[in-house]
Length: 399
Image 1 (cartoon, rainbow, N blue to C red):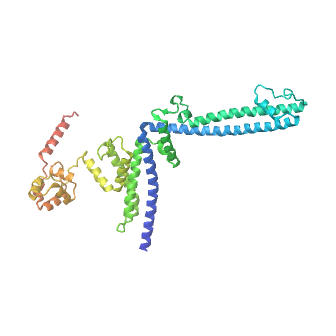
Image 2 (cartoon, helix red, strand yellow; image 1 turned 30 degrees about the horizontal axis):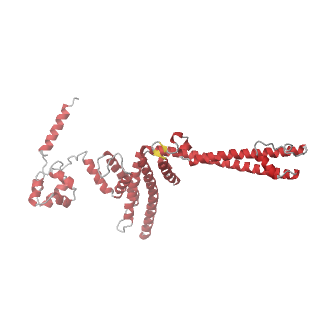
Image 3 (cartoon, rainbow, N blue to C red; image 1 turned 90 degrees about the vertical axis):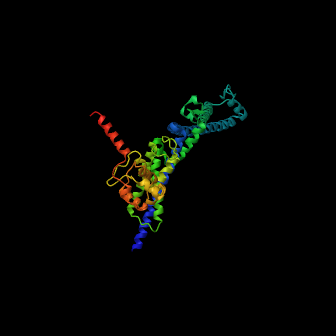
């Protein structure tokens, strides 16, 4: 019975992970791709997408017009051919040579009336002949007009964006500072992304899109960690953990992203106001995959802004430096021995931050010393001086 329950739980976890992977991968691909276009063209990216929409609309209109014109062209050609067949039949019946008929039809200045051709016929025959001649010339005229209109539309379609949007000054070569080739490359990429359902991402501002990228990759990093845990037989997380863990990854990625933008974290990101999309994606994955480590990173960054207050029982390491020299133990060794961060341990030795109660006991046990000789509740003179200075400044402020 327990085995069946375990199998059902593992199967449910697998389905949930598959859903996460498919959805998050879809979002990650879209946000990275659109972010790449934004980073390549900067502020002109939205301008390109706007022109691309206009060009697509105009292209569809031109293609519809082209279909209409080609239909008219086919009708005109059919009308001309039918009229010519009828004229040939009448000419043979009246004894008029086809060569003479064709020469008369092609001569714009010559008359094609029967009496002008030297043929005698009754009124009905003459009327039918004139009707066929008129239909023939109408077909020729419609064919010429449709052919010219068709060539004009094809020229607009081949001429690129400038002719489609009516920008005659661009002359089909440059739109703003973007060349036609660059525009075509960008719009072809954008069209491909639209075909996969990413059109809505183009409406998101680039700054917000970068944030979305970090959050999505944070959840994806959590999914990677969840897969490792799910495949480990020794692990047996609760069902709620599979819901909370992605949320934790998203929140961690959000906080780390905010710290990067605020300049509180420097991880070879360069300018914090123009973060590379791939760097943001990497930070998001790491934040989700290593949420506990990201939490400690955030804690260290926060402590640089808001120093840790003296908690109840925390004392100053008055004799710690001398005891370490006497025991021939360096900071790195002792910090690793008690499981503390070296940077935090340095602040204890420098007496800029008091030592918590638990760490006092660990340090005393490691050095085989007495906690009463290592730590004191009296703050060092530097801290007292800073406190007095702050109090004096507060007193000088008028109420």
